[in-house]
Length: 418
Image 1: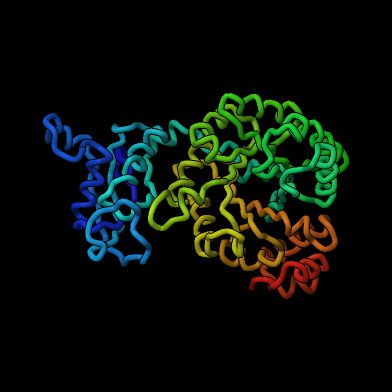
Image 2: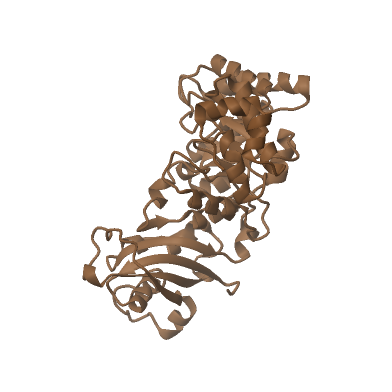
């Protein structure tokens, strides 16, 4: 790929000849419209038109055509399509890139399916966007966990705890040895437990724990808000000694993420809430593989991928592909930490580790810790024991034999995954 181009990969379906559909798409997203116009000269097209790099026919999925698509349903064909966009059309700007590679193309009636699957980005993007500031190494340093999986949890119940109750819960979790705690994405800045009051309640608890033990668990305060409030919310956290902020990426947008990255003094925990709205369908949207590259460019130090056996729609194969995607090198950026969540507990550690082969992960267990039959301390211990055993090359049976907290977790959450 030339350094002066972006290559976008799509899955498309159409009743048109595949090559013609590809040209329609390329034209619509660059120099063309529904008809050749006077000033769309050959010279303009040669310099600025998106080019069809390849068209590979693949089997239909059997899914329904998008509403409003035209053509003979019996003539539909599916293809993997790669288009090459001149960088000078939009420059190294994520918002303007998205206008080109993921703009009006979803509305084209000639396409009965259109999903952006991947992006190959030139180095110019890494010169404009800083990427993660802390990533794996910085997060490990701040939580005091130089090796092994970083074990975390989510405040549960998600909303409803008064600041004093939250402080009590955080004290229990810190004493239990957890590395990381985060606000649930549902906990914003409401009147019952405003951000400022949560910070005032939580940080003294963590500071006292750090004074006793030398280790301060990382608490990710959800600062998601209108963009003009992000910096002030961040500053509240930092002024109190906090070591992490959390944003819901789809709610503040990629430009909002980049905005706070340029100002942040602590790691940014990137939550992907609402991502299913743009990715769940096979027929339309943006695939995680493409989206996560833009999120990492914009500065997320941590990024949710889900975990195996989760409560959401993604298969284990899709989750493992998401983890692998976040771990792939990207334009020399600092590595982002994959965040495993949703239905996680200690009995999934060995199966997960066997697939991913790394402990450079932040593994979050909400119910898997809070719901442990012997309390949060045993919940944390069950997670820690399981991941240490997996990383040591032991079997799940070895871990169950050695760890009472893990055995008790299996009674509640089992069966284990092997």
